[in-house]
Length: 65
Image (cartoon, rainbow, N blue to C red; front, side, top):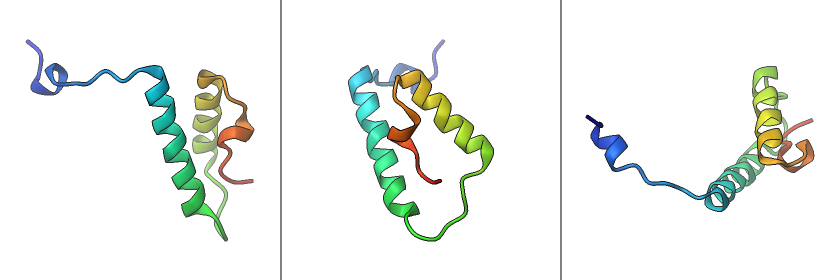
């Protein structure tokens, strides 16, 4: 038996998923501008993994350096 969350889950196509990810990344870039600490290593590793999976270079989603 499936939970209500699973039964009502929406499927998002790859293009929509990528657009959502890009929008989130853009908003994070805007929020993180200015003086701030570098991202923790585990978050940098996760961003690298996302870039690798989605076929984008690290430069496309790099937030800080």
